Image (tube, rainbow over all chains, first blue to last red):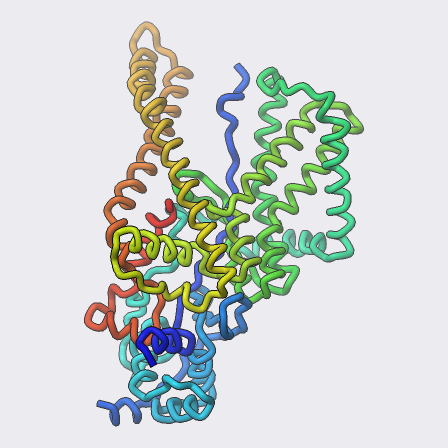
Length: 37
Length: 456
């Protein structure tokens, strides 16, 4: 078995990845150019 | 060394919970929650190790022979020992044997660092009654008719209202303009409550609501990290929860226009629809990003995309191209979609850098001396003008803040781009072994670079 296949198998058997925090974002445009004079 | 490893016994940390994790990756994946703050995606093999440790204290030899008996080809005692020592203990999943002091910091900082400033505004328990009430809107009996009304509202706007309507937002009375700003900012908070309410709808707790700076953009955010426990469709509903709330407000605005004929409500409808389009952007970390990650079943969409970029750049530089860990278990269709996504992300980032550079070089820098002069003029005895000084100092302050956030982001991006091009994120026993001797920085390196990667 070649090293790549071994690594792939190992990765599929024993690996850990940290998950991102799920922060749901929203922003508001200020419509700067539309500001009434 | 082997016999020592085989006889060492370990126990699962008390605050560890595991759940199935719904992804499109080849092979089963599980969610491991450590306390309330940290979450990991693990493969079935690692999950088996944790389950065995949950039952009772186990020696490495026990675990290795159990796993081998279940068909795991790589479950040698040394490998299991390395997995536990180098990966699971530093991440707080397994207790160190003999009460050894664990430096949890070794596992790196939390991953929510794509928000550069985080100010908690509302605790989850404070809004719980409100989110519990709003969560009823996510029941299909309520949601389906309301979405039907929303679709009809689109037809009404584009067929009846839009052809007659003339866009004159600059001539709105000041009161209407202020009202519009207030309502739009109010709906931003409602948007966040929508995410939290959708989470509750599926029996999942939600976290705090707060204010922060994303790249250089002020944002509101809701922490719905426990939603990793939900299946992909449910997570997609949580992702859409904010937009759903905005659609409902937009429909109500159009209804009010129908009854009153007041143009203010049409502007409100249009701004909310534009906000929805912005929310759907899958490149920046808005609702569209999480929707794409959840619907495609790729929980590490950003990291996987950066992995594809690293591979692409390595190929262009003529280096030996190694398969990125996150791309290994990926179905072919997903891999091709990821390449397209990465191309779109690189193009978008390029355009954004161009736009920001134009703003800085064409507006922020040339205007700064003018605003400074206005401030000095307003402070001069004889022509003392408090409103003018306040106005100029506020504008100057915002310009400098914008400049600060953009420049600090740019400096970090340039400083770390060379390092992340060669970085690795995933932790298998072998990867952890590579990191032996520099364990404390194993995850700090990628985590500290993540902010810069956001720009890509």
